Length: 257
Image 1: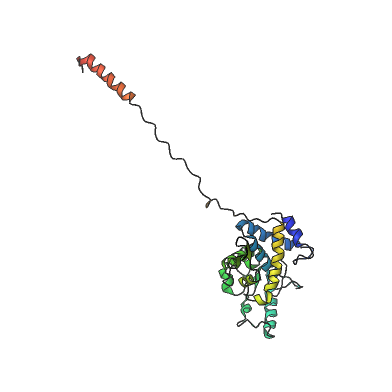
Image 2: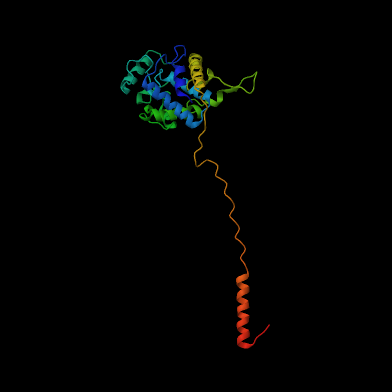
């Protein structure tokens, strides 16, 4: 894909994402996601959905962040104690009505490109508190989680569809796909769909066309030619030996046959 064309598209003032410039950290995050997508052969619609969720979950930073860090956060890397204090305050004010048990008090608050909460979810995605903030590990967990339904049981393939008037044209339900990460579709589904449309356009402008790389161990084995049949052995040596023996017997014993 033409990555320069991709960035030119998302940098447009009216694109709906980023604005007119990106920081190096934002570019690094996007590059890691695009690299993973090309390695996996991720379909264009699915990649647009992944980019939109990461954009939303990180407040546009495109880097793994801790919960309570948003687009306008002054402190981009607060301590765990600060995050817990913020969540306790919000919980006390009734700002987290969906929470039945303060999951953050043992440190299992949201971290990553997609905000992973609760210890069992960290374990399920093969992450620790530290690795959830590592870009490479978080990218891998993001793709695994959205492809396999490890966040909410909903997965990317659940939202593929074919256009009714033209069954040969595929599409994707970006609004509904918010359920892959979070159940707040009614609140944030339209916003996610807007981000996804911007990323879809950028991917098309860049000529994104995934190619699935087959590991050597999984590639079809080359056909081997059948072993050549051994050439038939000549009986000439045996015939010559018999003639010589006959001649010797004839000379010694006068034997004839």
